[in-house]
Amino acid sequence: MKNPLLNLFTALTTWASLRSYRGVFRFSDAFLQFPMATIDDYCAKRGFKLATRDLIKIDAEGSDVDVLLGAEKTIRKCGPQIAVTTYHEADHARRMIDYLRELRPDYTLRLKGFSFWTPLPNPVLLQASCVAGASP
Image 1 (tube, one colour):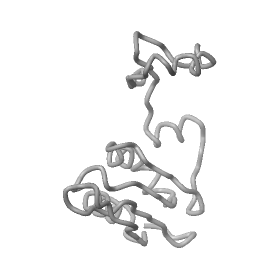
Image 2 (tube, one colour; image 1 turned 45 degrees about the vertical axis):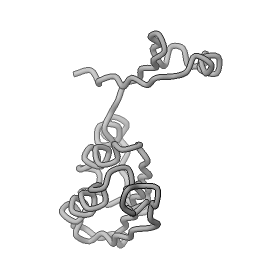
Image 3 (cartoon, helix red, strand yellow; image 1 turned 90 degrees about the vertical axis):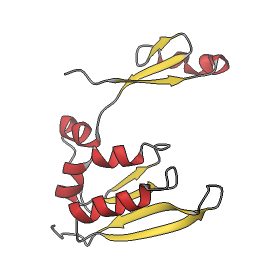
């Protein structure tokens, strides 16, 4: 199955800077489209085998939980370090913590910072790491 396309709105003033990407992205009116892939699919297709010393850094503007869900096999098998933003939605930090504890009980989890621009303070970042060579 072909990967779904993600549509991003772009201001017309940025089009000049995007001209070099023709052939990579499809342009449609004021939208930029590009194919999506999960971390699991991306790594499998390219033969990447992550390890505990590798880092997955996620700041997906509210889709951070979805990115983690798409990395399930990679996280479960490889236990890479993770740095993921948690402040976009009030329940994201709790959902991410529960999910990562289920996948890798050996992860050490750390919450960093608090957002005071949200209705209630939310943790800004979740870091996850496990001991090198550990298995779930």
